[in-house]
Length: 287
Image (cartoon, rainbow, N blue to C red; front, side):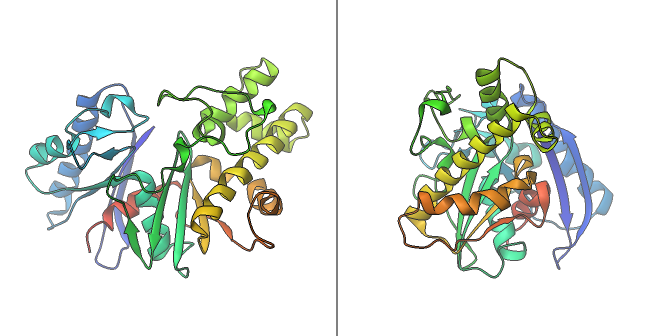
């Protein structure tokens, strides 16, 4: 939903940043905006700089084409080669959730932890894994893609929403902002934004409060699945939905119902760099 550029100095301090809306339906326009942002920074500051890009989805190690993006116009496109051709220089590229996890692990909320699972819950739902300060990508470039696994311990009250990936009951269809709004409409018949649902719940609306309670439980089930597989030292949340304060109060107490252990001490932290954390991580793709 947004495209942001940031220029960091050698001490990782931001000296320039700009955010614009993403023309999410046009591959050509997205390339044009990215190239234009980089060109503008280069012209303004006239410094030698490396370029890292965080994107939804990932470049296939086999075909070189982008795949798995919820900005669907990017799928099947030679995004990396096209961008490098437009800019005339090398670019490093990573999944946006991986960039987020790297940012928070190196110099954000999770900087004092060994094994970090970073979660983005916003327009979509993604994840990234960092161990000892190094991004773990995997041979298929899908490490951390928890959002396209089915919601664990699925119940009838969860419903069975369809995902853009072609499957149903993906975690993303419950925990993303659009997912919360869609599921509330299914339960209540009312078209309300996720932001308004959260605000109404805080104001005492019974239906919205019930929906948010269910959301907390769905979050606990989804994160418990991660803990049962990875047992990370910390989970850090970013993206617009991570600003729901009640997540950090309610979800930890629900985890013991689902985690395969006699105790659960995994901290769930909010990102220190907010919804710009991923763009910091993109810059940090270069040492």
